[in-house]
Image 1: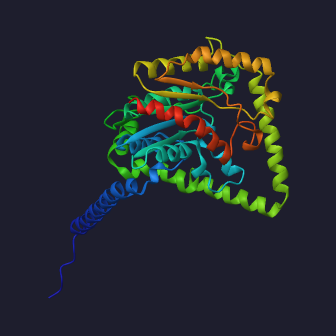
Image 2: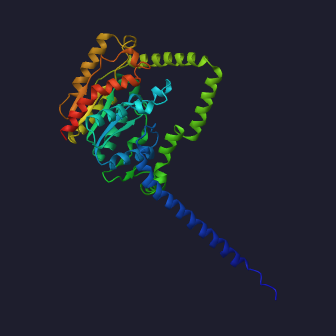
Image 3: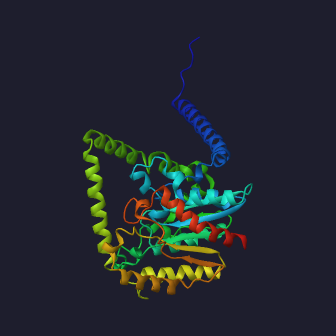
Length: 371
């Protein structure tokens, strides 16, 4: 007897059924992967690595590791000096182990053997006081035992009070993470923003994607490929690469000089106003805060600012910060750092960070000890 051919309706139901099974299986696989990652990734310590934070979810992934840490925890905030990647750009392949945050971690670990300690690096290239203001706001609910951040006179250049130049990361304005770890990027934006926030809060893999890309690909797969291309070009050029690096340093110094010429700590400077708000916020929160000045290379400093002008600006900065030990401590320019420990006009090498850590460590330790 001939088999009755399937109707279009039954074939359609079969297709939908198979599609449904596939979707359910995919969801189950992703759910299992998410559970495994939730356990394995934090246990591996991968979220303690230093990355170039370029998105709110990348910051959130790092901040959640910090928030959940059960022990003494210090948040180190700031610009490229805190980030530390200038060491890598000058040939230090192990640069992550030599950053200020890692050096302070080692210093405190030696001082307190057996104590669980986390010194987290939240440094971001180009950070201004207006960005730092948001970072302090975002980090405070995680209840750090201490906050450390750097300041530089360059940040108070009038170049950074022009429209479009007052911030380096606008997404920090609306980002918030409460004491329970709930992530939000603001109320505006409709369904797109709502779905993004929901996925970041509940889907670990989605939350971690930008962080892992930054860690493994230096920002993104595209950036990784560009880096490989540049490395190949430099290798093919041979010694020409050194000349290119020297030229880059000259350009960097010229740009820095132009910035320093426009430094102004007047009350109407938006960067000065942001610093004032930071100081008020940490005072109101009774948050122990260690502030230090990002010291310039002593060999280059005379080319950036006259000695008298530098001293006057430093005095103004101290007056603004108004150190209030023990909760607010300020460490001014370190005259003990020699030019040999700088990789350019402001960034340090491994030895420079070690010396900086030795200067800041005792003050940080005393601050934590009062908690």
